[in-house]
Structure formats: structure tokens, C-alpha cells
Amino acid sequence: MNKIIYDLEIESRIDSYLKDKLDISRTQVQKMIDSKLVFVNGKIVKANYKLKNNDSIEYDNLEIKSIDLSPQNLNLNIVYQDENVAVVYKPKGMVVHPANGNYDKTLVNGLLYELDNLSSINGVIRPGIVHRIDKDTTGLLLIAKNDLAHNSLSKQLKDKKVRRVYYALVEGIILENDGIINAPIGRDPKNRLMYTVIESGKESITTFHVIERFKDKTFVECVLKTGRTHQIRVHFKYIKHPVFGDPIYSKKTSKTINGQYLHAGIIGYNDPITNEYKEFSYPLPKYFSDELDELRGNKK
Image (cartoon, rainbow, N blue to C red; front, side):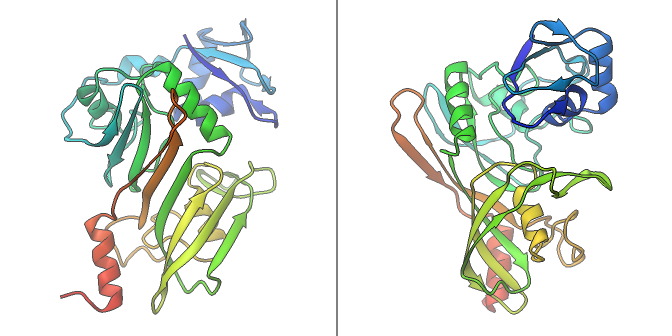
């Protein structure tokens, strides 16, 4: 059985929470509940059970039976690793873990090939995965190699102690040199595949600094204070400067075939054992730097 401690202050239905948390369909969650594979505080619950802070959730995921979790040599770029933590670069187009429509060639398949040990806290579908970035976002991820490291990194993320710096090319000219976007994010009630700024959403904070302005775009550095799904993409759409090339949140997608220009370039954390601060960076992918060169008029 996999275990999660619900640590949000707002109440949420167990079916909705597991659907979002596990990246599976509501039908699959319902099958888990009907099969008596979901327990809260040791008791079987119905789909409409309202979770409360510190509820203990245990579950077995039916999806495990249909997913190929075999190790695959994907030539992953392991930027750093020790006995407890690995820092891995995820390229554009790679999904972090198996889910609907993506059953192999995920980051997890590559991790199973490259690393001898991965934490078990998130179950067999997401071994070692502490946090995620979108399929078409490039950049660095922290990977836990054991449960002790996983618990430490998860707590650091919850306590906003992990430093996550992103670089984005956004539409239009941002006039301010620095800014803070503090706007709650939740599911878009009009489209369940999207997220939006909504009063009932979760606290979401992004700070940004303008690095460079072009004729009709702005190159920015963003620091995540929270880690909501699609946070940077939603926040910059909210201030009317969507990420360039974003296939969901920008209407100007015909100018690029590279997806959103968003890169997780820096990640810093405290070592789970020594508490020593460690920080790693990774340069922009070539298509991103080439686009900046073209905007600067330096493209040959």
C-alpha cells in the first residue's frame, strides 16, 4: 500500500484529490475505491469523503497492472548524485512518470536504468519522484534515492526551502523590472485539462526579474515560492504575458514548433543528511538560446 499524509488546510473530496495527485482518470479512482483499495485513517471510504488536514491516505493503484515499468536506456543526463539524491536534467518532450497515454520512455524508465536505488514513498509508478515539470518544459529535477531523502526533500518543498529558478520567454513587453504574482491557482471549471487563477484555488506565488526585452517579447527569470501545476504558465497568462509557444495558455502558438519556452535552470536544496546547501544549474536548451539570438538579431 502507498501512503500519503494530506497536508492542505482546505477540504477536498478523496476522488478529486487522488485524480490530481496520481495523474489518473476519475474512472480509475472510482475503480480503486469500489475495489476497496483506498483507506483514510485505516478505514474504507466512499468517493465523496471530504479530506481533512493530517488525514492518512493509503491506496493501491490499479494502473500498475497496465504500465510498463521496465528500465530503459534513455541516455539521461545525471548532473549530480550521491547516496541519497540525484539531480537530473529532463529534456523537452519527456514525461516524468508513466500515466495515461505515456506508458514508457518516461523519466522514471530512464531512472530505473541509471540508478540502483529509488525511494518507494510514491509507489512503483513514481519511484524517486519528489516533484515534476511539464512534458515540454526542460530542466532540473530532484530525485530521491531512498525514503529518508524523499521525506526530507518533500518537507523542504512544503516549507519553501528548495530554490527553483526558471527562465521563460513571454509574449509582450513587461514594463516592470521586478514583480511578484500572488494569485491562487486551481482547476479551470470550464476546462478540466487547464488550470486558472481562481478564488477557490491554492496559494500560488511567483516572483520574476526581467533579464532582457525585445520588440514583442520579454526574457524573464522566475523564482517559484510555491509549486502548483502549470504555475508559471498560468501566472504569466494571468498578467497577460503568456509563455511564448505555450500550446494551452497562449493563443500565439503558430510561430513555434518547440512548445513553451520554459526552462528549469537552477535548483538548490539542503542535503538530507548534512544539511549542507547544494545548488546546481543547467544552460538553456539550444532551441531556446537560438530563439534569443534571433530576437537579438544575431542569428547567422
